[in-house]
Length: 265
Image (tube, rainbow, N blue to C red; front, side, top):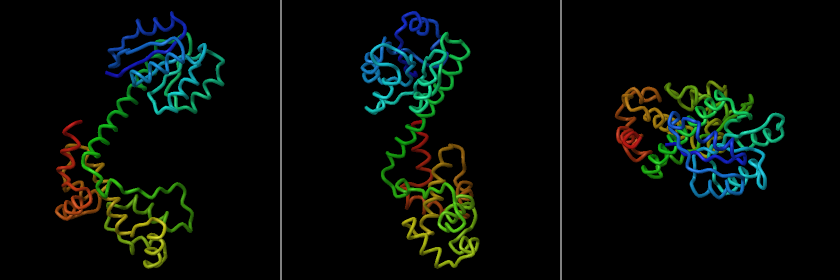
């Protein structure tokens, strides 16, 4: 069940929300309530809810200050804010804090339904990601898990490494080499090799291999994909060679990796 805490100083609003909402419809349960931000911080820190529904304006510690305090202490559930008309400055601050949704008083049933549906889905997505990370951690610190992709935002014409990395991301399923990319960039193979190693910290070939195997890990999250099809998707025509490279970098075979991922999902 998704765990909910409600923080609201108006007793009728708080009790009305808690008692009239069909929480089971959303797979939720209310695990606590508080009347102000100070109580909210203590309660949330203790019960660790997945979602906090809180008023913005409350005596003592308001909703914004409460959220800031929680985030500073590493407590970060999803937040739904209850606000009044005209409280735009509060709403703007809440947006900067990553609040998931807003409810305007008096709370409309459809707005509440949309807010809960979207926020609960965000919680479920987060939980799924955490489960996958746990499974990857169980495999150990394999070299491919330590691989850091070279991130490229905007690539200028003379940024040959950025363009090379972009080329890999678009063509990794093809039979490409450093010469292929160098020809595409109209520079020499040796120049691209030296520049790539200098900026990325890996040879072009190693980066391409790690990139492909990490993509394979993503494809292996799907339980029904055939190993040879995944090998072809990332540019390996020989399944046995793909499996050898995969085990060398990840520590287990592609099948073992997929079994580990799906056994506890």
